[in-house]
Image (tube, rainbow, N blue to C red; front, side, top):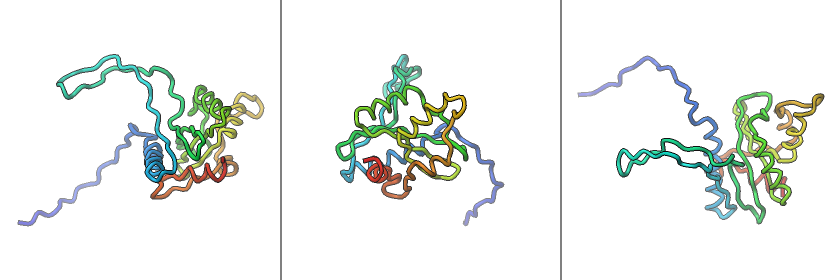
Length: 191
C-alpha cells in the first residue's frame, strides 16, 4: 500500500516574539566559540545576575524556578580578551530603516562602557539593522557623542541615524566561520 501525501491548505504563519534579538546573540556566541577554538580570543556572554526566590519541586529531578528577580542591572552582554586588550560590548537590533533608537541603551550601560574606555579597554556595540540585514560595529566614542546630543534642544535627537552607521561606523562581515567576524573590524580600526 502506498500512502500519498495529503495536500493541505497553507496555514497562517504566527509571529513568535519570545526570542526576539536572540539570533544576533546566538550568532555572536557561535563566533566567540570559533574564536576560542582557534585560539584567537576569549570572549564570553555574561550571565544575568538573578536572585531566586521560589522553586517548585514537582519531582526530584524537575525543579523549576517559579519566582526570581534581577539582583542588579546588567551592564553589557559580552566581554573578554583579544590580543592582550580587554573588550566589552553589547548587541542591539533594530527594525527601523532610518535609525537605532537610543532608548535601547540604558544609562548604566553607558556608564559601564565609559569606564571601560577610561581604563584602556575597547568598548562598542554590535548593531543589526534587520531591515537591511546589515551588521555594524559602533565604537563607544560615536555612541557617546549621540548619547550626549540627545539632551541638546537644538541638535538633539533620540536615535542614531542609519546614515551615520553607513558613513562613520564599520560594517561587520557575515559568513559561515566565523559567523560575525567583528574582531577583524576591531583589529583593523580600533587597535
